[in-house]
Length: 150
Image (tube, rainbow, N blue to C red):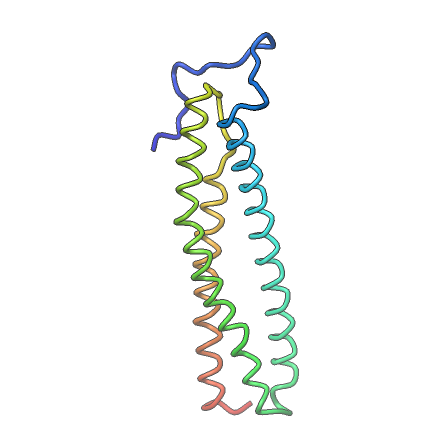
């Protein structure tokens, strides 16, 4: 898809109106709100996950010498990280539909632009890769904890 602005863009003037009951306009608003919701949820999940994982790792490194069973605390964030990797990867692929729908509605209504949904796509893609790296690192730490004594 070409992300460059069309050469024949139509910018609305104050004399042009779009009816409130226009189905495409309603869909456009729903998809825009959905995009904002996705960005918000994505940010909240990432913030929550890294805060919890950071707290677990701090506690793990501070107390591993006293409790060998503490290594099992690494399993939960590893599983969560792998799950988020799969969810975010899927979300990045599905986001292409949202881009396609908004491009269609924008063209049909002659709107000059749309939300920059590609930002969400990059955010989901990068975050999914980071989740995979974290899952692998936690998995390696867990396995090595059986062979390396603190």
